[in-house]
Figure 1 (cartoon, rainbow, N blue to C red):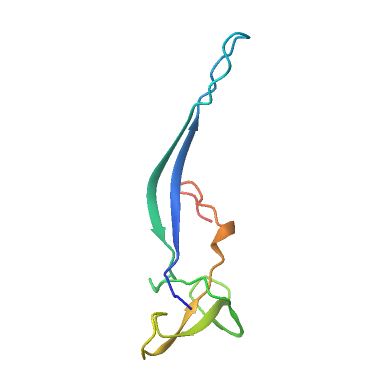
Figure 2 (cartoon, one colour; figure 1 turned 90 degrees about the horizontal axis):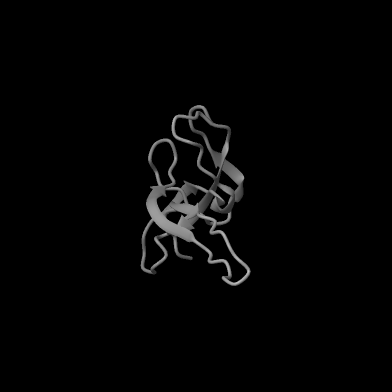
Length: 103
């Protein structure tokens, strides 16, 4: 299983409606652009992963409830390397709060 640190990507989307006339069909005006990438980590800067969590243990971090973790062996490219336990995040449902908002 490949262990890749999680990232969230921030994009900007701007929609500009265009007036239409019966003889001229509407044109869709959407600007879509990449803004930046956010590396998802624990509060101690250890990268988070997206592997299935282990329901028998968890990680403790200041100001957070018990966080789900997954144990994996190596880095996912074969060969021998130590196992580690990292915080799991299911990133599909994440959204960023506006800057300055405390969530």
